[in-house]
Length: 287
Ligand code: 13P
Image (cartoon, rainbow, N blue to C red; front, top):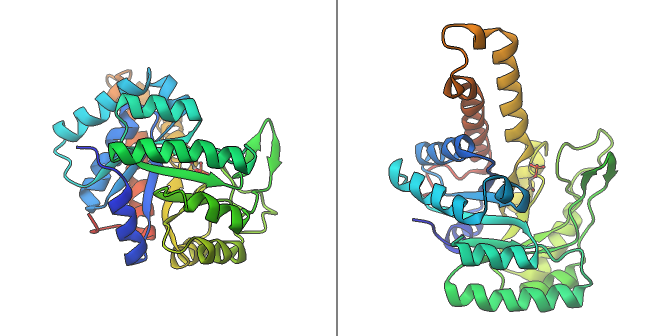
């Protein structure tokens, strides 16, 4: 069964650990993450970007696949199926399709519009028992070769959004999606502490989990981060393992063209990455 992320995040906040959000792209990815969560007895959040949702043939297909896998693989740990960086329309579509959690990323709107749209979604999600993530301060990243440094959120704006009753808040603290450039100054812990001070008990979300040094991850958790998103690191691990398999000529051995065999090294690489992150985030045995 899919669950809202509310209970797992409140527990993580109180227990000073973080639940990992791992983004999914296909069946193998999803299976690897679910099996690892079960092995680690860790709660887990499956993230779906709008692009990945389209790739996987729409949100309804994703809901069907994930629910089917939970049943067939006997997954007993709490699993939330969560829209990542949703538009207003995307959030509504995922709610309709049966997601248990959505993110509405209104960080690019003027704060008044972010507040108005988030408020409406809070009402809908509360009625249906779904969790809702909101964002203040855009997360940086690489787009068309231009690397933007992550914005730092305004704590006052964070409080305005938190007070609407969202389940969790993503606040920009200099974090960036994708790989961090060599001259990245690191997370702004001053911003994180100021945001935490302003929003009180609200579980905070750290995006751009790939490549953040372990000591910064631990410090962020100690300052109120209860959910950490990881995407690129699984992609890198999957690509490297697949490439190594082919470069070693293993795809030419025996019935090397078997798609299940070709995808197996990448599958194992995702499992190893997810396990490592769950250990680092402290969510093992917390299901
Ligand atoms: P990375 O791709 O940097 O791990 O970030 C993932 C993320 O924040 C998804 O919202």
